[in-house]
Image: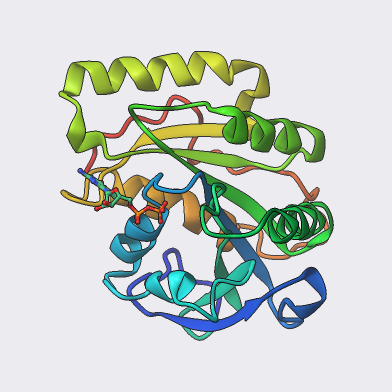
Length: 229
Ligand code: GDP
């Protein structure tokens, strides 16, 4: 079932919300988490990726504003995970602290997590939250793919400049981090995102014991450009 080269992201469905690590589904083979500050464009990106305008709204629906929202891609146990944005404007401080603890727990201990998509508004990249996620990735040696969202808000020149600046800022992380521009409004960068997710969720040496845990793929590196769509 997994020997395909590409997943059909339009065939994605909501599985469950988990408030803590122990509630995360047990039978997942691999998962990729999406994180970003509130308003970074995470819901829009997930909706664009899956071609479902309502998909990520589940994460914002009262009762489902839990910590970790699971979406399965296709029939195999491969998941996209929507993590809460920071900001939590309407949430009491105690609740925020609890969520931060659980988020840390999830990032620290979730074994099937193979990569993190970190979304940043292209006009406001590398804020405190983003840098702390990058610090965590460095520590865990977890691959990160940065989506510079709302690229349609900038002209091509400034957008490319921002991408270069961000690449420069994460240079010390080497191949662990890739960067691209993205727009949910015009679909810019969608193919690159597909490629990155495929490379994480469908590794070439699918589950081969011989492959070291962090043996990255060579299909993308941090010089990835965003104009092949
Ligand atoms: P979230 O809080 O990270 O889930 O952010 P949302 O996806 O809800 O987006 C926040 C705001 O940014 C909304 O008003 C969106 O319409 C807008 N937005 C999201 N993606 C884009 C984009 O690619 N281009 C533009 N111009 N606006 C966007």
